[in-house]
Image (cartoon, rainbow, N blue to C red; front, side, top):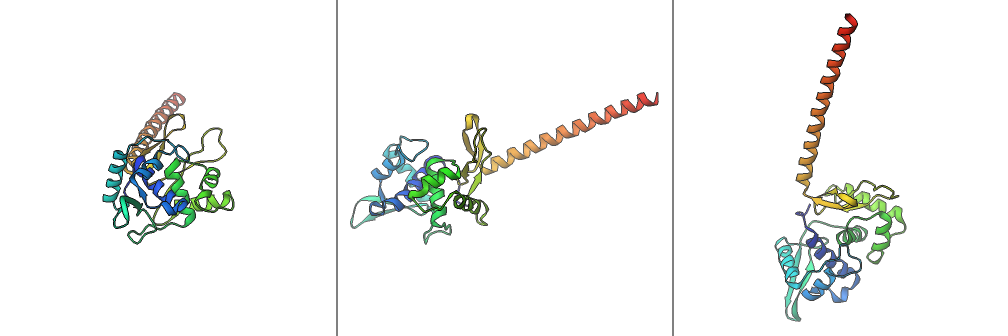
Length: 222
């Protein structure tokens, strides 16, 4: 797996993937075009308000991680940027068009249901029906070099479960249906702590039951 990415980093990568597919004639993107794409009000959740200096810092960080590259020199009046996230000669991560469309949408809009992904990813790739989306999601969740997505617990009153990408760590539920990303190591530590608390509570309950049985036996013998 790629090193964990924060929200702004996944937004930059998602925008580069999106524009590579939807407007290839304008790709790679200039800093101004990339900033506008990151702050776009449609097909984005949450809507951001990043300035060019912030986006440049994000790009510089992603360049150091070898997830973005800069194109400059002859023919380019301004530097332009392209992603190296997947499907390149510079890395081993490979996605099919449908897998890439789903990951891109999850980067741009966060956790979504298969139905939402089918509708929103249709501008990036083709899906016959929701069953096909679900099959791709399950493959992304079980790939030997992954997993890359996970299914979240179904929210009360909702018919479908949402799926989240795992490039920002394991998702954990927050208040009012909010999804909070926490590092995978922290999630494992929290799960271990919960297990220890449950084991201690179970031992306490077993001791209480044993004491009650002893009292009952004493009363019955008396």
